[in-house]
Image 1 (cartoon, rainbow, N blue to C red):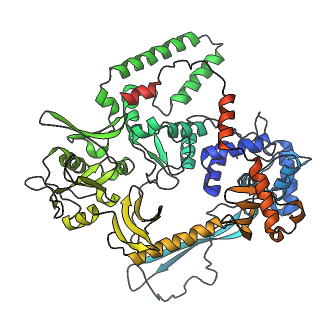
Image 2 (cartoon, rainbow, N blue to C red):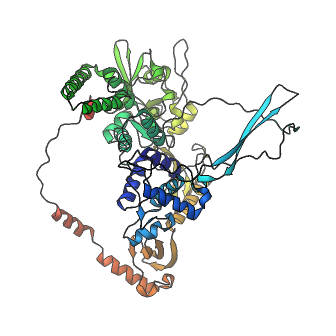
Image 3 (tube, helix red, strand yellow):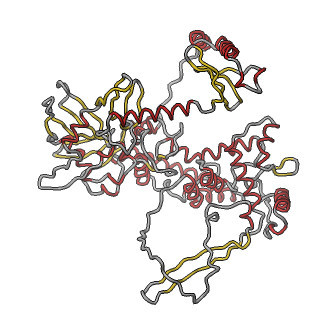
Length: 629
């Protein structure tokens, strides 16, 4: 493994992102189980090669040894491989036991990572896998058509005996029973339309591979590059972490915690479009895939000439940098914040990035009209079309006809779209009976058609809107408590007592009845009870209305009562389910005595706080200034 191939394999086989892969490798390296994980060398040392060959002979036999194992490393770094302990590579099956003996603690994920490195290292000195590829062509005399297929049969397993990729693991068809000239009978013929799919989005693994191909960065910087892209909210990924952008950056890009992103995909945000447009126009020299490699060549040339040209190089570099800064400072505000989308080229609307999120802007009758861009569009750009954006602005600035008049209140009912999605508005602010109701995300996408008056087609009928504006609605009572159906930010729900239960997607919120709601409540309660009782070995009895349970946890068995956990008495370690209720209650009471009370804890924490001098005032970052502008 070199760094980039290690990151890609951890992503495809273990599901790790680049950051997690490097953190896990760092732990294995610090505990002495693998070599240094930032390397671009792919040749083993002489000792490691001999040990890997010995392992192959021991496990598989001499016939599995490769013939191209004479190349050894003569550089400072080797590839990522298992470390040598007492003259051997530690077998993955003995890794956890070995770690405990040496005072360490490895999680199952780290063991899987070590196993990946171990198998790849052993496979690197093994023979090639030999396959027999057979192609089959079937001609027809009745129709002008030819059918083709192919298969590969493994003749010699070679390195695949220990290390196998997902493609190699696929089952192969066997054509041994067929011979040239055989007549076949078509039992069934199925036509299937095939269209060429567009290139898939970058995952973290494929992005690292592309960085390596273009020569951008070094093995030690790949993880940091992806971390920076997430921290500044230039990309959005399906893997949520605490480093995926600060609140200012995420808000400016339009990312929300509910945004749905395809798995393993890096989705560029509108902020990244604005920044890329600004830099590519004002600094084409720096926004260049060959910038790093060209600078390395220049520095190598200076080093080979005893540094005689270094002052000239530094002078030219700073002159170009100062020129770039001046050009950026003189750039118009709107152009520096504009996210240029292909579908909006030449239209009267534009999408800009601001400190409170992306928004739509157009100039109409010498008036600048703006509206926040709905959150769902920050990820799904296919809906950002001129007709759609003009429809959003028309809903806000043009005189809008009401869907109808509510017969109960006599107030007009309007359909509107804001940053957090579509909603209904009954009446105007300040009027008696004024109310708003959130609508499902499906109503944010509506068709815009052109007529003589350029009217907008509403996605919801007046009758359906009346049903939504009546939410939440009471379905009836269950065990003396009301069951209420409603729609909130996280979707349709049933409210019973003080709990909320999600309504399944196959059931309609507007048509759900009391019997269906009771079924949802009962099923959710049973599921919660199973999760709550997970790991329960025995129930000893109730004290003060709550059950004392014997549970099995990460560090062994223990007693549980409410939120108090206590150790099993020594006499009952072998049979904890036989503990008398009185003994268990005594153990719980002893644990409660040593638990800190809230008031004492607060007083202790206050006394422990040292009086510190006021923090120095630091200048705001350039990125914050850019967002705030």
